[in-house]
Image 1 (cartoon, protein in one colour):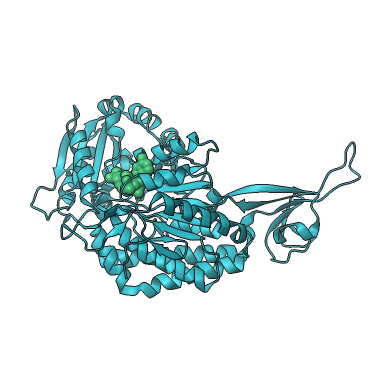
Image 2 (cartoon, rainbow, N blue to C red; image 1 turned 60 degrees about the horizontal axis):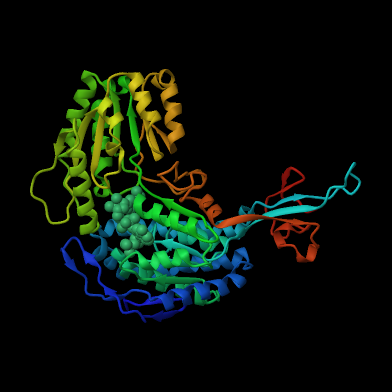
Length: 527
Ligand code: NAP
């Protein structure tokens, strides 16, 4: 049942006087539920509870945390069709997509449950003492990762489950030992409340401290701003626009105690098509990109928004085939009138730039809030000089840049902003001939793909989802996969510390049987 209230720790609360509703983009009508934005007092209560919960939760064992995360997964599954229906009502996405995203959310929860149960993720390093060392003795030093404290997570608009209330940021933070306060995304507040209810049920069942999780509603930026400014908050996770992510990053850096903001933001995910592969496989590649550009109405951070090639008859033919293919695809509903509004505005902005021409556009009548795909082209020199053309157009859009030669292609790649992904299509050893361009691309991206598409982010340990700014605010970290836990922890060294007071992971006896680096040797042994 949706109450429209905030979860302040385990309690439902609606003290504020600002209310709002979510929107069904498919039917173009408001949903019935009325949500109450969290008041300043409720924000403070949530942070206070999280601060108190942290004292106990930071020392909770991996097994208990694992039980908690698995219980969240079970409770989300128990929400069954009610969750899928509200997801559909608030996003315009299909039930199939809801099921797929729920599967990913469950998989992420179980993956982190296994990680913390096993325990080696804390990166325990032990250097035993050498009292006899000359000229000075060496102390006993032991280091491991410990959680930062209460974390604020901003739910993403484009993944109501996998990047929101119990999504990757929340789950990795809870796994690390940090309490989480979610600033629910206003477009899917009902989905958020249902998932929050599952988290609270799981927390109670597994006897987690009250305040380990809160879910706050908001219809504007104030709740998020107040949370980020709160002195007890120690880090922030965000997925969304560059404007929003940058504003929060700046805010966090202006605090008396600056804190890290891990924001995953805009990316146009450049694709380089080399000449021989275009000659040989233009039909196949055009078909693949017509599908990738329109997948989920282009509302993915890895959407291929920029295609780069060197002018030739083959490239011209490829563009024509892509244009023919892309208009065959039926448009689908976008997430919200604001999102489609931004899409139309940004599309029009690119279209109005000098030298840009529309190569294909879906022009048939579509239902309200459906995103009509478009492909535009531009010469290399024009693209190079006009940075407006380098901005993300969030939706089923791609700009094809026709470079006059290899050198111009290289200059363009060199001057691209940071990106989540970059793709290279090559044939017959072209990757060797164009190695310097590919090396340059590698410097601009977090993930580089060979003869494949960027859409579809595998959740696995080797995945890097983050790249140089503005793709993310800190390219050293990933927002997907087990290593995303590293965003919420810091290393601490214990020098000459008594055995019985050391964390269990650092004691002589390896009780947890975790991998540890002892005197430079990775081992499961005890000392
Ligand atoms: P958004 O506008 O960046 O908002 C994301 C969240 O951050 C919302 O909860 C929003 O709160 C909050 N927020 C935004 N600006 C803020 C500020 N200055 N201070 C504090 N909080 C702030 O993103 P969105 O609503 O998801 O979608 C808008 C656009 O973002 C899309 O059209 C698209 O261009 C881009 N986007 C990109 C990606 C990507 O992965 N590349 C993903 C999603 C969206 P309120 O809504 O309450 O204001």
